[in-house]
Length: 74
Image (cartoon, rainbow, N blue to C red; front, side):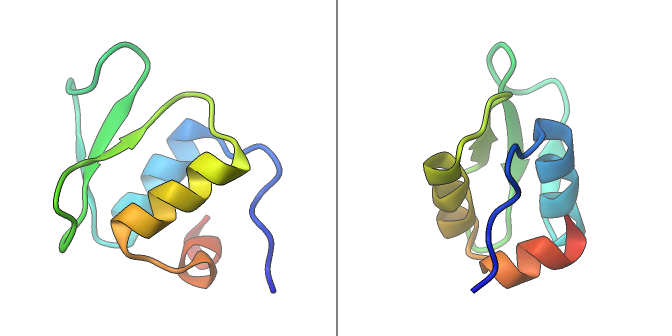
């Protein structure tokens, strides 16, 4: 089973979500958080500046993409 990147970067995570069909919301988000709207998601995905493994799994689960799909574009 593939593993998550060791220290995911906020900019790279947002870029990967956009490549997978999401829309980044510039100027939205509180403080250092960024919002990405994913098709099929009930609400925008919140991507904070510091991302650990459990948080990354939650982002993937909320966005409806698999780890393999994420790693292909990351």
